[in-house]
Structures are given as structure tokens and as C-alpha cells.
Image 1: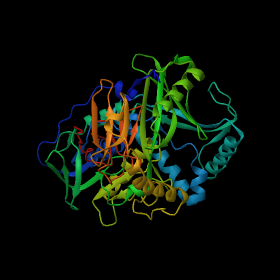
Image 2 (image 1 turned 60 degrees about the vertical axis):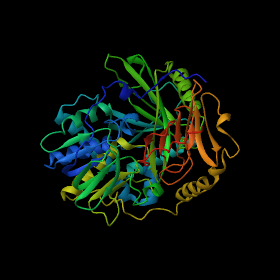
Image 3 (image 1 turned 90 degrees about the horizontal axis):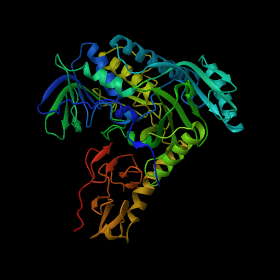
Image 4 (image 1 turned 180 degrees about the vertical axis):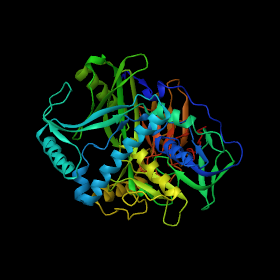
Length: 504
């Protein structure tokens, strides 16, 4: 199967690599922030502005994780959310949700203006559109719910897209931007006067409570009064956030389009095969059209190349655009539709988390930074109670029961996969589970014929990994950890690689 686009995020491809040092000696600061995506970078900035010394610690590079692989819509209208929020949480909490996300957009705009950051920030209308009768009913229900909450939404019969639409809800004055340009610019303001930025520094764990010790794989530690964990899903299992959410991957393709033909605003469809659409200016004066979708639970589909192919075909047939980029990302879906922002547990008053952004992480990252920085600074925040991270988990919803049953089923059932296959059965370009000397092995043979073999057991909580064909990675279907074909950690919550298992 031939895919056209280059396999790299446009946001990363269009920015220079960052080059901050690795942590090489013990450091003491007021606050350590683990994870340098949008939530982490912004939290560090807000705390530094308030006079705190900070250490921003990243296992890879600034903005190279989930925040660098998003469609980068900064939105309070998040597909279809408000009707469900009212039903599940009531009007007052739904109103606070809308208010807080709109405040996050305004705070991002203020930061960009104050720091004079060139990150292609643009105010845009945001549409959720339907293409059939069932979708139109849902759109109209969402309009009614959002208007009850006082949100400035309205109904339109058509949108600026070359496809038949039965109707849409629109919210004006939302935003889009280049996320990595923003994150790099903010990170550059942090070092100095007792604050630091460290890259290529993977955190293993956090010990203690005020002061806390952030222990890294490199050896040195960071001592801080408070620690903020912004690693998509917390790398610390205390608090059971892996059981309060589930991981979902989604895919994006992009291609150059004539500026006069590009859709003017931000769009997302409803229904199982929805598409997310926006364009972005490029530094050479052109325009790149982005189309996302094809989401699925991590590890549930090995033929991920087919998902890229469907998006590339949509880009070509709907817009007449040839694919230039393709990439994927993942996020964690909260069972009650609200993110978890606050203390790690009731007993951890100085270790904080932000997770469960449910595919809308741009506004929620800024929102998390606002809530967490206020909490650390002792400032009352109007939305802290709504997103309280230690609230009772909704383990009895249909979705949570299904997802956690699937985890248990896979933990047991996947151990029988590859039981009678040997490493010799793996063909070029193929990854599969095999058995060697009684051990479960994740085996991949590259195009040159070299075999790469690692343990198939995820070091997080012992699930069996699954092969991702399009990205040559081993993905854990239980909690979303991802590893390279050589076992290196690509995505947490795992902090240790897959164990090497030579099959000599």
C-alpha cells in the first residue's frame, strides 16, 4: 500500500529542532514541570511570571509529543459536547465548562500578544457540521444546549466546504495557531534567574511531598516544593488515571492548496467517519490544508496504513489536493467528558496532574495551566472544583465498564497470540507476536532482513503490545504506551523500554 505524504508532523517539520541540555547535576527549584507540551510549557510560564523558579523537564524535545501532532484548534465548541454535559453533569457545570474553555482561548491570545510571539495565531469561526439526517438532529440538539448555556452559537444551513452539508452549528471567534512555534517561543523565555529547561531527560518517578524529588533515568534529581505532571497520561500510576481514561489514536494528512480555494474557518463533522478540517499559512506564503479523523482505540488496529490511505483519498477527491504530510497522535478520553486537573491524589498536596483532554487538548492545556498555577500560588480558581482530579471516578458508566473489561480481557487473551509462531515466520516489513524459548516476543523484520526482537510485555502494567503497521511501532492496547521496533519508549505512561530479547 503506497502512501504519498511524508511521515512527519507539519508543525515539527516547519520549526527548527530545540537543543536544551540534558539534566546533568542535581537542581533545586520552586516547581518542577514534567512534560514540555502545551500544558507543561504554559504552566511553567505562568508560574515563572508569578515569581517562581521552575524546571521544565522533557523526555524528548519541546513540543515534539502530542502537542506537536494536533490539528491545533483552540476551541470551546468541541464537536458535540454540551448536550451530553448537561445530561451528565447539569447546566451549571456545563456552563462552567464553556466559560473556562473560552477563557483559555483569551488567555492564550493575551500570552501571544504580551510575548510578541509569531505563531500564526488567527481568530476563526468553528463549525460542527452534519451530512445526514441523524447528524443534523444531533447538531440541532447541540445548538439548543449551547444556547441554554449562553454560548454565542447559531445554526447555518451550509458551510465553506466542497461537500453536501445538511446543517451546522457555528461558534464565532475561536482560534487556531502553530502550536510548536508557540511552545518554542515560550520555552525560550524560561531559562535564567534560577529557572531551567531540560530535554532528553526522562523522569522515572517522583518521591516525597513538599519538598518533592524528581528522579530521572539520567541519575540526577530535581528537588522542588511542587511538581506538575503534564505527560498526556501521568507517568505515575498513583491515582489510577489509566483506569479513569482510555487511549485513542487519530490521524492527520495535509497538502498544499491554493489560498483562494482553502476553507476559511475550522470544521469538524459528526458521526463515526467524521473529518476534522482546517488550513494553515506556511512560511513561504502558501497554504496547507489539514484533514484529520479515522480515530480508534490504541492497539485495536494493526492496519493503520489503511486509515492514512482513506484520509489521503479524501484530501484528493474532496479538495483536489495531493498529500504532502501525514502523521498521527493520541489522547486520553475521560469517561465523564471532563479533564482531571489537580492533585495526584488527596494525599498528594504538592504533586499535580492534568490529563483526560478527550481530543481537545489545546484549550484544555491552557486551562490546565491556569488552574494548576493558581492552585500552586494559593489563588482561588473558579473552575478548579469542576475539574478536580480527585473527584469520584465514573467506573460504573457503560463506557468505563466496557473499556476496563477490554483491558482485563486483553491482559489475559493476548498472551495466547503468536503461541505457535517462531521468529523465522516474520517476513520483511512485518511485525508480529511470536514465541521463543517460552517467552512472548515482539518481532519485527526490517526491509533489509534484520530481525528486531524485544519483550512483548509492556513494562507499565504487563499487557501485551500490538504491532502498528503504518508507524513501525509496538503499541500497548491497555493504556496507550508506545515503543519503537527496538523497544525505546515513544509514548507513556511507560517510563522503561521493552526489554531486549535476542533470538539467537
